[in-house]
Amino acid sequence: MATAKNFPATSPLYDVTVPALAPLSSGVTTPVTGAVGAPGQPTYCFVTPNVLQNNSGALVGGVVGEVLMVEVTSPVVQAADGSIVYPDLGWWFVPDGTDLQKYQNLDGSYGSNMMPSREVCVGREQLKFGISLRRLLTEARNGHPRSNMALLATGIKFVSNLALKLASARGWGIAGDVVKSPARIRVWGERYSQDTLAALAGFYDGSFSRQSLRRELDGLPPITGWQGGAATMDMWTGLPGGYNQRGTIVHRYFNFASNLAQTAAQTPYILSNVQNIGGAQGNVALNNDLGYGFGPTQGTAAQAKDALVIQQFGVVPGIANIAWAGFQVGGSNVPEPNGFPVGAGADRWAYGQVSPLRQGSELYFPLPDYEGELEIYQENAAVQVTAGGTAIAANAAVVAIGGVRITLA
Image (tube, rainbow, N blue to C red; front, side):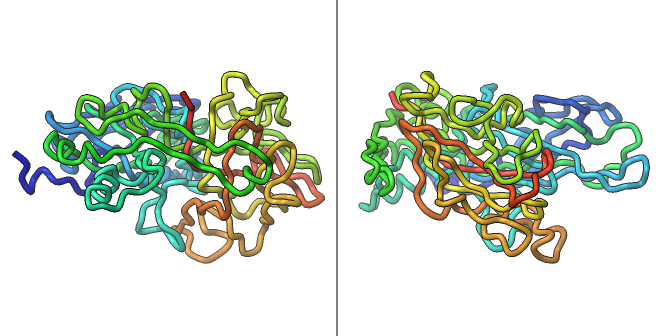
């Protein structure tokens, strides 16, 4: 029988500290419980004691979990020469042993942290992985169902345990380093019991339809489908954000990229390696491709049923020589004529470290909401940056996006 103790609220689901990570790490899995490695070793991370039940990232029996929000503290070290260094950090989720890098590939580096803690955010709300399913189903139960519920309830679903994978080219805690701030990743969300889900399960509606004015005017079809999950214990990971979805698949999407090569002086630089949509091999790192070949021609056949609803877009401030950033859709800049204006002054699309736009070196701008409607389906698109007459240096421009990735049945 349900009691007040069964009713969920936002609470910590996982808390891991990483004092050391070896250089050229490309996918170190964090522990579910206890520690990996030992102090002084190049790969060392541990579940933070006394924060979670059983001091672990594993759920107790009889409940399932939903990730809704993450807070990342970036690594900072003093190198052997005395200089302060900010190592790169990439990370993504591994719920119940399933790698989700295809859908959420996130930057936790100091200057471009995509998920800063609430206490250091300025100007905007923290990013969410989705609206809690409990909240959406309760609204429907009370007679106020939301449309496109399947595109909103995209928190990561798991039934047993959480882990992360970590990547860093530079690493930290290595010979000569004094670690000023170890990396720490805290995950928040909700836990659901059988009783809670049984009271709400009948209110899940997996149907959705999205059609922006741009697509309507261009004569393109709506993104329409049905996500066939069910809000029950045994089908929990078949819901949006779950790793066992069948038919239409819906995931919250995040990715970031930097220009591996120097840009041209004024021509848009496509942050993608896919040549048939305007990119070039070596433009970006393998897992940081911001190109989407969904078009029936010149696209990628394997992605013909894919769609992406853009919800966030941001550029790290302080990039020398940058003038524009945005998207190319079907070969045309969006928004016209060159994308969004960006630069050294006040930047509406800035995210990450607030410097040099304002004082306060420990403050962060969360990734901004995309201002407008951009849905990519049956067309080709990619993120681009453009210099203002002088080339942008290699690896200088960092761009991140967020949204909902859909694969139609």
